[in-house]
Image 1 (cartoon, one colour):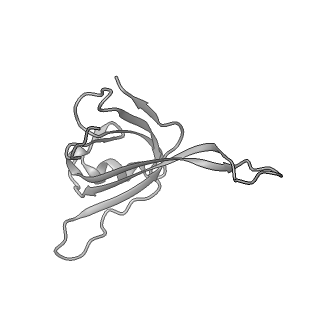
Image 2 (cartoon, rainbow, N blue to C red; image 1 turned 30 degrees about the vertical axis):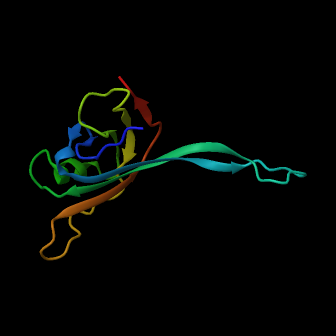
Length: 135
């Protein structure tokens, strides 16, 4: 099994590549757990239900044109496209691209103390299908 250090992830929101401001990224995809146990069963049985997800990003804040704040603030309350890859290189079987839409449901442009790096943490729920592409 190959291992690697995540040091060149690619994060694009609303067609703007914000990768150079990303400190961490988590794309969490889940499926509801539906219990299908019936009378007489001695163990719980389950099946997968609706899928859901969230995209969490820790940004180094930047208020300049085409950067973090000016990209995200106008999107508050809307859905927008995202693309996340483990590496900024070409999409491939070893570097899949995850794409979909997120609801920009909150915006906290400043949340730091004196002397700290200005960062912005966001967690957006996904909206609709998430796809995994290898080409």
